[in-house]
Length: 166
Image (tube, rainbow, N blue to C red; front, side, top):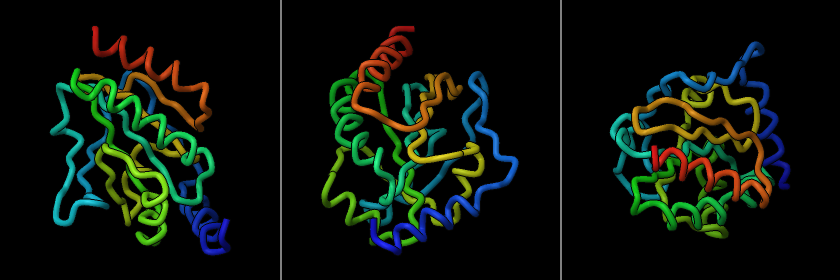
């Protein structure tokens, strides 16, 4: 980890509210409207994704488990995107160059947005990276997943299938 990435991780941790709490399952997902990191001039709105199952993935370039999750989530996205599944990856890096470098190494086919102000992590109550929120077709948070290991892929697939079939 480069020193600047370490500082970014520390700054992110220090910027979190001291009483941060992750939003509970069963609650509506907070509003998210953010610019694309990879598509100039495009904006993504989480509310516009209603009707689909959505995995909102908070990530940063300095996050080791994010390097594990990106190829796996991209594979799952490819598997289920035609069935009403969407991924919205929200980057929290201080510098967009760090995120772009990460994406050059680990490209994905799903939308990646950038939250330069840190509003979305605060609204969702993010406590660490990566944190994913599985949201149903009505916009309700159904599952929260912190961290990521290769073995988590089976669990995530099963949860997505349950929501797609409900």
